[in-house]
Length: 303
Image (cartoon, rainbow, N blue to C red; front, side, top):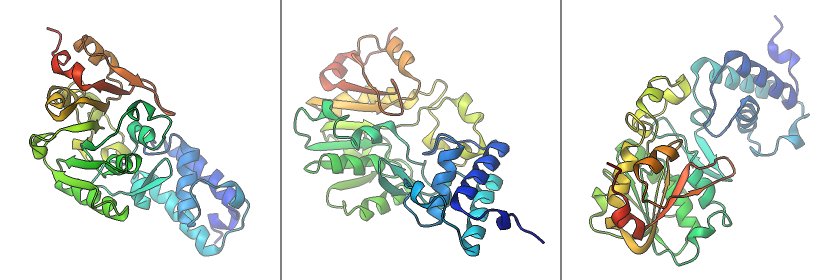
């Protein structure tokens, strides 16, 4: 009997087929790829052990039978299981940096990661020396690692509530050879750091509303719920970070937090806080920067 792979011979053939199948199946994206084309390209190039950002040189290469069978299996697995491609491959990428991931952690895709990986984008934080950095809700450890790379002279503390997620972060820190620079702590937000103070606190905390979490498609539901759940309006943990950050920032320190679509809610609730909203290549107004001196009295809510 004739098989599908008899008609699909080149990488370009498989890319077209995968995009068509993904669109037909109505799968969800957002774990490093924004559409069917990007998702298919990543999965296929990974399956062939090719650079994930270089489709063109290989697009018209004829594939061997085992390669074709492997790619077809990857395509069908993505559709039948609705598993994010990053969980299938075991890795996720931020600006050319790869991180080990599995179902114990949310798939890394933080806009703060874009900032930390881009020396020009992070210029607002480079006006002085950064000696100590705290990464709250570190998950896979990706932001702590990128911070350590951006500020090579800094000590970085990475805090994670989930012991399972912390195990993944531990592996990523080791893979980058940063065990002496990045200290991994398990606990709830500021609790594990005691009275320590930092020049920079960063966080990509859970910020999805309860309603949105309940309506997640399978791809997002496959991630740890605690990595998304931010309460009724999504900002429960963000508020806790705002309330506690002043006690852990140096006088000229800064707080950098990703909040999704929470900009208007925060501006209305904390009218005295001078939020500086930083845009990235992929986002507008989803990350704020605040100076420590503003948090001393400006973090009080509007009554």
